[in-house]
Length: 310
Length: 310
View (spheres, chains in turn orange, blue):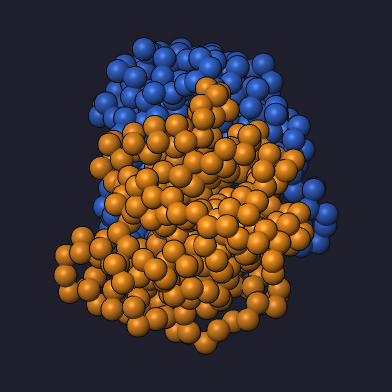
C-alpha cells in the first residue's frame, strides 16, 4: 500500500476568482498531511494537520472563514476518526477557536466522551490550553457578505458563492486509515444546527476493514442517508471498488433527496475514491512524489514534488 | 406482514424492586403504540406515542426521570426516523420539556434542519407551543440520588441502579418501518455530551429496504461502531435474519470495546430482533392480540390483549 493523504475543500460551485487560491489551499493541505505522515507515521496526525491548514485558509468554510449563523456568529462542527481502533472524537457548536479538528481529537483522547457540544466543548478547549479568540475573530468580510445575501435574497443564490467544508483521509503502508472533517455549516443557520460533518457514519468514518470517508454537501441529506456508512458497507460486504461504491451511493442520494454532495475516500487496499454530484469539488492528494489536484469533473493535474521536503 | 410495535426500556441492570414497574411501563408503551398504529396507520405516530409513554414514566431515563448532568440539570437526546422516505429529526441538549421525541419530530417536519441542539432546539419548542417547564421540574429524587452516588463513589456502582434509555420500532402491513429513541444520557455527564441516541445510524435508524433499529447501552461505543447501520447492512447486503445480525454485531462491539449494549429491531420482512449483551434489557411488543414482554435473557411472557381496545 502506498501511503496517501487525500483532502477536499468542499463540493459546490467555486467562484472563478477563487479557483487558483482553492487549488493552492488543497494542494498545500495534502502536502502538509503527507509530510506529517512521513514524519510521525500517524494517519491521525496526517488528517488533523491537513485539515488545520484549511481551517486557517479564508477560502474554505472551516475555522477562520467559516460561514455565519443567522446571528452573525461562527459555530463550527468537526470530527476525526482512526480506522485501527475505531476511535473518534466530535465537536459541534465550537466557537472562537481556529482549529475545531484538534478539539475533536482532544475529545477523543482526553475525555470519556466522544461528542461534545457548545459550552462542554469550550470548557475542554480552555482546559487543554486552546487559544480562545475574542468574539468575532473568525468572522471575515466574505462571510458577512454571504450572510447579508442570505438575509436579503433567495438563499439559492448562496450556492454560487459559498466556500466549502474541508476534510481529509489518509492511509499508511500498513493499511491504517483515518478521516477528518471540519466545517462552519450553513450560512444563516439557526444556532445549534448540527450538520453531517461531526456525525460518525454520516460525514466522517474510518475503519481499517473497509476504508475512510470524508463527505461534503447538503448536510441534512448526508445525515439521513448515513452516507459514509453506506459507501463503506458496499466495500466491506459487496467488495465494490471504492470509486464505484462512492459513485453509486452518491448518485442514489442525489436522486432520492434531490440534494447534491461529494466525498473523498480511501479503501483498505489504498484505492482512492473522489466523487461529487455538484458542479465542482476541490481535492488534492499526495502519493510518493506525485501531487494530484482537481476541481471540475475529470480534472487531474499532476505535479512532481519532493517527497520529504519540509 | 403483521403490524407490530416493539419497545425497549434500556439495557443494563434493573433494580429488583423496579422490575414490575419497568415491565408495566414497556408493556403499556407497546400497547399504546400499537393502538395508535391501528388508529392512524402511521408508524411514525406509533413510535412517537410509545416513547412518550416512557418519557412520562419515572422508571426510565428519558423525559421525566432523566439522569442528571454533573451540574444537576436534565439534558436530553432524542431522534425519530421514518423508513419510507428516510426522513428523520434529532435533538440534543433539550431541556425543560417532557417529550424530546416530539420535539425531534418537529425538527423533521417544521424546519429545514434535521438535528438541533440546545437553544436552537428550545427556540423551536417555544415556537411550536411546547410547554416549557420550570427549571428542575424533570428532576426526580431517584436521579438526584444517582448523581450523589456518582459524585461520591466509583462510577461503576451506578451501573447497578441506573434506569434505561427508551426506544421503539414499528412496522405496518405494507412494510413501512420507523424508529425512535429518547434518553437523558449518562449520570454526571458534562453538559453538552452527546450520546448515540440522537445520531441516525448509531442509536437510531430506519429504512424500508432493511429495517428499523433503536439501540441502548454505552453511547460512546455505539456511536463509534455505528451500531444501527452495521446491523441493517448485514440484513440488506448479506440477507441475514435480523436477530442473527443483531447478535453478531452486538457481540462484536462488546468484545472489541469491552462495553455492553442492547437493541431492538424490526426488519423489512417484519421479523423482530431483540438482543443485549448486558444483564438485562426490558422490552415488550404487541402483534395482533399478543403482548410479549421480557427483561432477562430468554424471558418471553405472553398475554392476550384486546387488539383494538382504547
